Length: 458
Ligand code: ARG
Image (cartoon, rainbow, N blue to C red; front, side, top):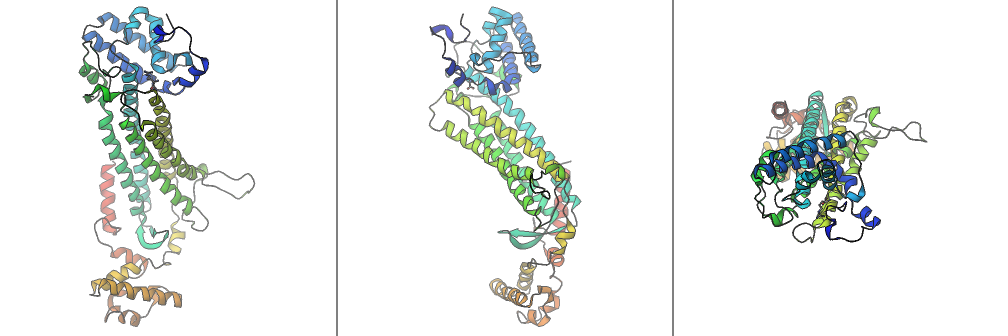
């Protein structure tokens, strides 16, 4: 009998270059646990419907456990001649059990098998990622609490805009990662539908029980169209999109902190353990981890692109192109998982330098918009108030002073009596304290959000 599981109709051996070209064992061996688990459930079901005897199913289940242990311990020979993980495990089973092993692949195709394995793998990956995201959210929340008294200059267009509490800044990322978690949870619903039993593409004439397999493997539902199953990679695309967005969120933050670590900003000093030096410039301490976090976003997004292009124009059911899906899947996951772990660790070890931040906080008219809003509250129409404060800013620039340094007449010329209360909102601390809208950086609002997130992430 041929080494190949499909060798029956072939008369000459496969070209060695073709074996090297078509193999996937170099990367899909990662699925061995899932492949074994799915095969054990399949065998159990085959016994339930009478396609295997109880004893055969037990022999298969036990032999698969032994094969799993051998792979785990590195005591298993992989060969490109056996293509993929499914063939390797089936071949090893046949070596152990002979004809009993030859029965396992009853009412099953690698087309529904591979995607069942991948779904089991992605399901675990989703749960692992969720845990990593929670870890990062907790690190952000702790940073928010550690920097409770820090006021940051908030930027738009990277120009000074309005003051924000550091806690508000950190919580902004907690929100982003919360949406990432929700996206993963939503993706999980579509992952958790059983493909196995669709067989090659049309189902099977054998009396299988797909519900039993679904129950055993913890799938919430059974895929209802066999033709759809083997070409469906939608959940993978969604998953890698979710990973891409996480990578984008990490990359934006990394860029911010690279900037904040410059001599020009000096808002923070990165821990030595997360930086590297220069081979020629003795004084250098470079933010490599953050740069790579920003840079690796490219490969995660490229992996999404890889998948989109891979499935574009594919006809229904299985096509071998699909084998390439796992390359992108594993790379995207590994990259994001490690980035999340490092981001949380870096956050925990970094302190914002409030002495530097506070020193320049009064520069850049961070209180100008609050002043405009104060004018509006006193009855000045918004557009007129905008114009008037703009002029006051220009005056300050001429006099090289701050808005709070302007004399009462300057404000009274905008609106009679304005000067009487205006100094209470000028200066960054006052401007910040004046915020009150829901979701704003108002200290009471931020305190409330800190409580909400402390409870949610407890
Ligand atoms: N190694 C293949 C993959 O990853 C498994 C499915 C192969 N199916 C087939 N009919 N050749 O997609």
